[in-house]
Image 1: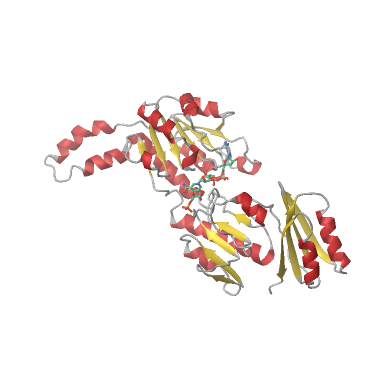
Image 2: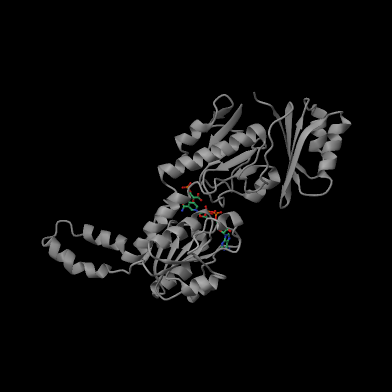
Length: 390
Ligand SMILES: NC(=O)C1=CN([C@@H]2O[C@H](COP(=O)(O)OP(=O)(O)OC[C@H]3O[C@@H](n4cnc5c(N)ncnc54)[C@H](O)[C@@H]3O)[C@@H](O)[C@H]2O)C=CC1
Ligand SMILES: O=C(O)C(=O)COP(=O)(O)O
C-alpha cells in the first residue's frame, strides 16, 4: 500500500482516481509516499525520507523547492495544460474588466441603492465608465505555453491583433498557434506595439520582477496589463507609479497584495484563474494518475525535475534509480547486478540536466545486499524496488 497525503482542497474526482487496493489517502500521515497539493507552500515543509513524489495539481511549481526535491530524489509532477482553459476564460474576462471599467461601475451602481431618480442618476453618471473596445487593438502575449496559446488564439476571435513572445517555445506548442498570431522577436517589440499585455510565463529566478520600471517605460501610454501568472513577475512599486502616472490605464492581477487593494486602476482577483470544477477535476485526475504510475511502476510523465521515462513491466521486480547524470553509472549499476548473478530483463535510461533515471526489470528478487551496493554507488540519489502488482 502507498500512502498519499493531500495538502489542499483536491477535487473528489482526483481522490477517487486512486485505486483503493493499492493507495491509502491519509491527510494525517506523517510518512507519506506522496504529497498531492495545489498552491500549498512547501518551501519550509519537513520532507520525510520516505517521500518519493509530489503531485502539483496545476501548472506553477514555484511553491515547491524543486532543486531540493531533486537532491533528495523526490519526483515533482505537475499537470501541464489541465487548467489552461479555465485561465484562458478568466483572461478574456480580464481584458473586458481592464477596458470597460466594470469593477468601478459595479461598485458605483450598487452605491445608488435607495437613491431617488435612479434611472436619471445612472444615465448621468455612466460617462465616468467609458472604456475602449478590444476589436482592432493589439494584444501582446508573453509566454506562449498552454495558457498563452489559448489566450492568443481566442483573442483573434475578438477581433484583436495578437503578437506572441516566447523564446523557448517547443515545436509541439508551435503547431497549436494560429497562423494569424504574429511572432515577436523581443520583449521590447511586445512592449512597444501592444495596447494590452498578458503575462503567461512561470515564476522563476529569470522572470522575477521582469515587469519593472524599465519595462513599463517602454510600453505604450495607457497600456492595460494582465497578470494571471504570478504576482512576483511585476515590481509592485514601479507598477503603482505607472498606474498613478497614467502609463498603465489598468492592471488586472490574480494575485492579491496589500499595496494593490483599493487602488484606482488596479483590479485584484483572489487567485481564481484555475478555480472551475472542470479544471480542478482535470488537474486532480491527471496528478493522481501521474503519482500512481510513478509509485507503482516507476514510470515518469510530466515531472518537472526528472526525465520522461516509461517502460512496460517485465520480470519480477523493477529497480528504479535516480542518479546524477555522470559517466559510468549504468556500468556500475549493472555490474552490481551481474556480480550477484542477476539478469537484467529490460533497461531504460534517460537524463535531464544534472539528473538521470534508470529503470531495470529483473527476473528475480533483488537481494538486500545488492540493493545496498547500488545505493552506495557515488552519484546514486535514490533507489526504489517495486514488486510487480498483478
Ligand atoms: N492564475 C492561475 O490560477 C494560474 C496561473 N498559472 C500560472 O501561469 C503560468 C503558465 O502556465 P502554463 O501556460 O500552463 O505553463 P506552460 O509551461 O505551458 O507555459 C509557460 C511558457 O512560458 C515560456 N517562458 C518561460 N520563460 C519565459 C520568458 N522568460 N519569456 C517568455 N516566455 C517564457 C515557456 O517557454 C512556456 O512556453 C504557470 O507557471 C503559473 O505560474 C497557471 C495556471 C493557473
Ligand atoms: O496551476 C497554477 O499554477 C495555479 O496557479 C492554480 O493554482 P490553484 O491550484 O488554484 O491553487
